[in-house]
Amino acid sequence: MLRMSIILSMVCMLGSLAGCTPVMHSELLEPPFDTVQVEPVHATELWPVKAQSRSVSVTDQGQQHEAIDQTTSIGVNVWRMTVSGYWIVEARAEEDGSLVILSELEQAEARRVEYDPPLPLLPAELWAGQPVRYTSEAYLYNHDSGALEATGEVVATYRLLGKKVLSQGGLLPGDAPEESVYVVEVERHYNMPLVGVQMKILSAYKPGSGPVAGRTTRTVKLFGLLPIQHVISVEQR
Image 1 (cartoon, helix red, strand yellow):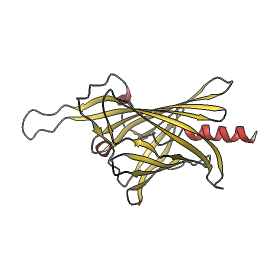
Image 2: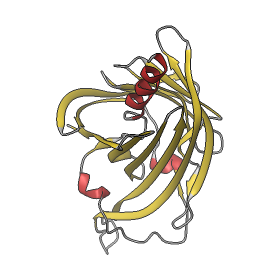
Image 3: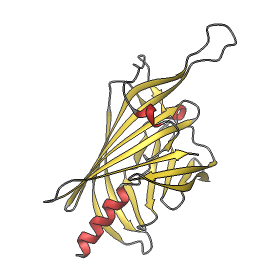
Image 4: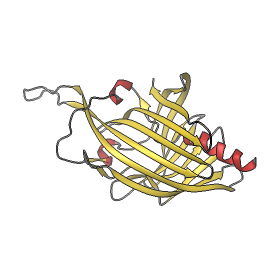
């Protein structure tokens, strides 16, 4: 029973990982998407991490809750991203331009996940039609006691799906340029004792501003039982 309790705690934690990003226009996440020209998009442009605080509405299985989404600097190129009452993510901006996860904490369950090697929030660059894959070991800790409760492997695949135009650019000198968002899909597959978890994280990024829409769909497969699906998003107020 204790082992199953640990696994179920891990399942709960996986629903609130860092891929959940602020939602302004959820329709931005829906196809069709415009084709991206033959050039990469860079994490430093899509998500220029900076200190900020804003009110958000968390939608968890259709139920809305008010919260504060806050990003603070806690070291050189190290950031803490918090949605109050839900999760805390510590991330580091790497020299190659990627943004990687140092730890993820689900506050209600007091469970922390760490990855070795660190798992990207965003790779340094993404090309349309060229998914990239990362494999890491996942370690689940009891946040209060620090005890290691479970280990497993996670495989994450990152895809640049395309872009959506928010507003067309003007034709004359001095006119406003085109405004677009780029939509990135991340699929995570966790293999843990007695359970498999699949996550699909859709995020829309406005270059120079960061994430403007996001949704995480999690499917839990306990061995011998039917899959359970969970959807969570965050909307900026």
